[in-house]
Length: 236
Image 1 (cartoon, one colour):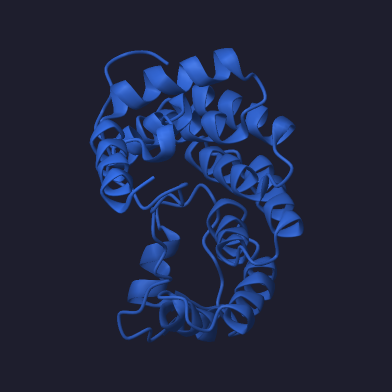
Image 2 (cartoon, rainbow, N blue to C red):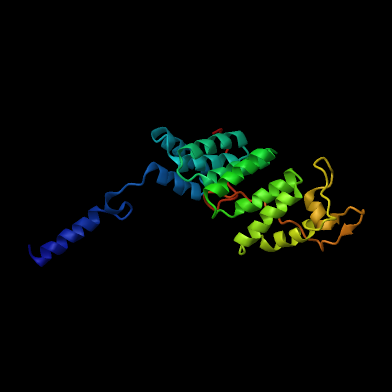
């Protein structure tokens, strides 16, 4: 075959094989769903994800994404069901345990939140925010100062570059004070107020916190950086 014929053949291949689908490989349904998910086209992504789990009932990431969508829209029980299924079929379910922990915080179920955050850390010790969340549950939902000190201290040791490091470190200064008394769960005084305006002490005085706070963020750790998914009017 001459050089001219070879060049003509290459040109024909390029024309007949557009780069939208390299080497004839077509996007899978999950890949399409993931793409729309990142583009915040949530209804389309959800419908495709439902197709995925219908065809592949053991697809952990599809369940996890569906859980994220439900969680972002306040459908906590739906999110729990999806995350629990993801845990069952995933070989590495740390992130799903973490999500479950956050859902249970939303539902005010401290013991279940604590259990799932601990499972997340045990499954994947590199998921350092679990240490922060465990300390947060002990502080806000259980008023267990020693539990908070233990896990927030570990958090500072293992995650020195975390953006909440300085705020947590400052909060620990006051929590370690033996005179610092946390308000009971039924108190009208919140933990945030305690750490912002001064820690109550045994002798009735207050420790000057210089306006510091625990810096707790309600940000949901997700499969992706989307934190402001639009509301989805359809039920999952």
